[in-house]
Image 1 (spheres, rainbow, N blue to C red):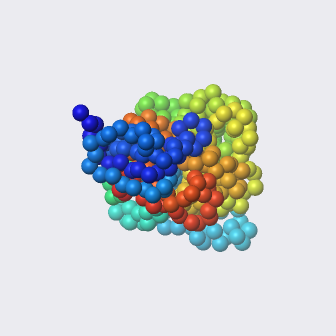
Image 2 (cartoon, rainbow, N blue to C red; image 1 turned 135 degrees about the horizontal axis):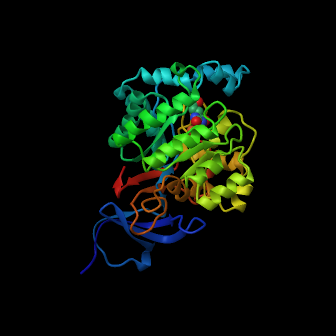
Image 3 (cartoon, helix red, strand yellow; image 1 turned 90 degrees about the vertical axis):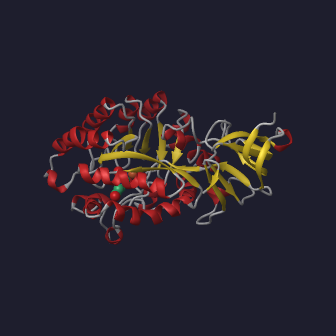
Length: 403
Ligand code: DI6
Ligand code: FE
């Protein structure tokens, strides 16, 4: 009996991202059944399927659907005025210490209902999805109290219902110190660990736990306290590490077998070694580097030397990276960090999937994984990193369906 499949895309070129490079299959076809990839390979070798729909792609390229593995997409308001202040000479850290920065977004986010958060975040999500993104990570961290942190995560999950996209949520209660904490970071961290995080986890709103480990955020010791609480709840951890200074966060998150250490401008070789041993992914965020006019480039050569998986993400947030384009993040990773286009594409597919703990489901094109695709009007996949502000997406596919 012939195998039944739902749809076949034929006359395509495939970059499967399996193995080390693009994983190119020329004159290819890809079949989907029940939302998964059921077969892919050279069209000439395709079995005689019993199929209901065939789509001729006329030589277009298929890549895995792109993955934005680090965003703060849900928030209210914006910080354009701080941008003006920075251009007038104030630094990001000075603005933060003067009561602006993250806590100003906290004020706006606390005042917004769940519906209002969804309404304000949806245009950002749509812009990100338009670049071929099929999975997005969204963090909390602008509530800094139990109620608002949970509301943000609920809004993030609701966005995943309103659009065809997979959403992963990270709890980031330890993002900044709220005003009412009166400067007592230890007491606030205790509240994060004993109240906020357990409540959000109980409500089923947390896929992973993140911390902003930084001078203007939380110390290495305070981060460890949050990781212990995550571990007790059986939740994986990740970390904003070494963005503006080196607090040995990379080694710490590796010690907990963390999914990823993100930013890493100031990481040292010991941190990279620890990440390599633990299989912790380096998530590079060139949008924040660019927007803060940073000059301290993360040490990609050391990361390559130790074989770290390097992902790339937008870090979409109102203060340090108001960026809603993963394609532009890829371009910036190449121009600012000297990534190669194939590394950048792996960074938003295979390695981004690893940073979310989702390698079994997404990130490469192979039989058995979800049929999440980005189909492109391009002649070569390097074009995805090369163009600045041009979007060659032809079709986004999530779970085998047009999205
Ligand atoms: N690192 C960042 O770059 C952002 N958060 C973080 O932990 C900044 C977030 C903001 O300024 O609103
Ligand atoms: Fe971030």
